[in-house]
Length: 345
Image (cartoon, rainbow, N blue to C red; front, side):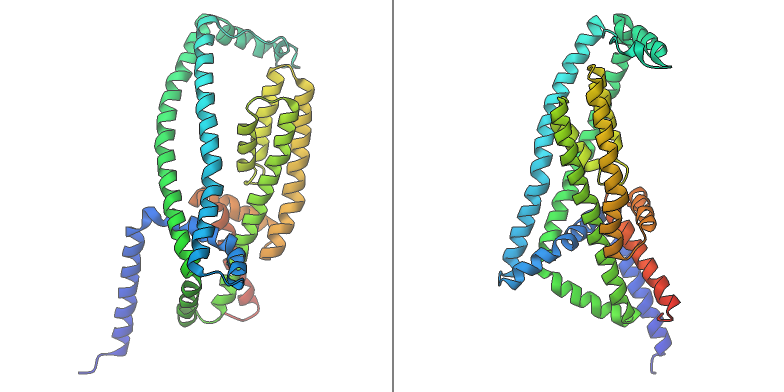
């Protein structure tokens, strides 16, 4: 008896669906690492292609680029980790001193408009008075121990993801062309030739988002870092690194340069604090309203409003890697929409 082709097709689809679902379930904890590897590979693929054109072997390219990215990611994190460990010791010693003798109210607090008297009164009761300082800082210290314990566990998980991402990145660099060719053949059979153009739009969106977020955020961090150093801000390296990281998220840098300005104001450097805020607002305004729309929107053919929605939606849904996956998904949906409007799907 000849099998019914319809039953064969249904069985094949069911088998493929179940196999893919089980594979995704099995690899669920590794998907963030694979996503990061894909983002890094897409962002640096033009460099790989240039090395291929120079005649360098794929396995050597994979080793070199993976090692370079590992150094670029791990060395700054290690330096910042060492600096944070040192600062934690200093902060812990300061907290012990403040709990014993209290923290005197700065003279400038009472001079703040509208809220100065209230803030000075709260400071006097809770920080300047040794009994209030012991109670308040004691609670903060107990919460800090728990926070640092949780942070250490979270950091270990992030390091594991980074290591798996670098391992996957090596194989993407080495076998990337074969993976792309096989993916294109499967996509052509399953969805038609239009999927290649949609996939190219998604790749361009990821690369443009990396350039627009990471490189622009790094530039913001460098500019404001120089300003922090010139203003005499303590812990300049930490503030610079935090600014560069949060500047990768549109409108994220003001949190850090705002804290930097408050730190300078607390040391009675009011002019420097005002200048830091003014420079920070100017830099972030230019970056978020002019530079990023050009880098991301023009390269990925996505209106910047949709880029922002993709960035924040991806960040909320997928975590940090969603910064790059979100715009890619938006680009896919917009490509499908445009094809439907042109009667190509």
